[in-house]
Length: 142
Length: 60
Image (cartoon, rainbow over all chains, first blue to last red; front, side, top):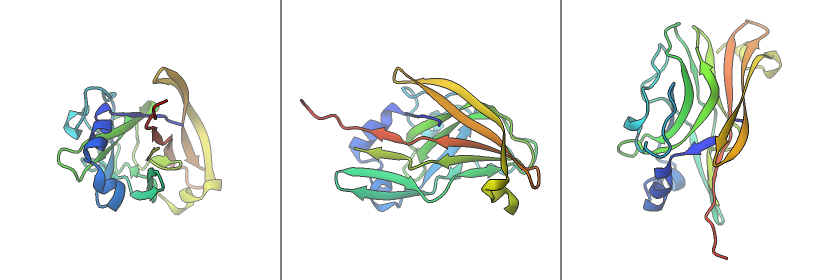
């Protein structure tokens, strides 16, 4: 499985309550975006800090809804998903990509949460799809 | 995505992208894959996304 790398500011954002509506009320929309160059876990904190985003027919700037769900349990918080974000190339004009970033698109600036590395460059051809299979959930705070 | 592509039994793995990543000093094997629908020939890339677990460390 692709292991996540958290952005360092995610921890301070959590403490500051930046993501409170994503964690408790599920009123914040989390999104997944694609890029070719590796994000910086220590230097990037907002969506605008990320490397150049992928473009192509069928890709919406800012990425795809992560379909996040919020759940709290005694002593822990888990943010899950009601589905798997996916893209279908509408033409053979997609930029290559490799990294998938999860961020909060509702909060101003789009604070970053974490990213995954596919492991190699993906060149998506016309009609091909890319799916982020959310195996269990996005994150848990213990 | 075509309906036939959504049937798991129609998916054939034609390439596995396995690499090693280091996260927090620990090596992980990453597995992502390229699949082909045996019915229509559609190509699908899938990345299994592992969840992030944040642990608040207790004293002691």
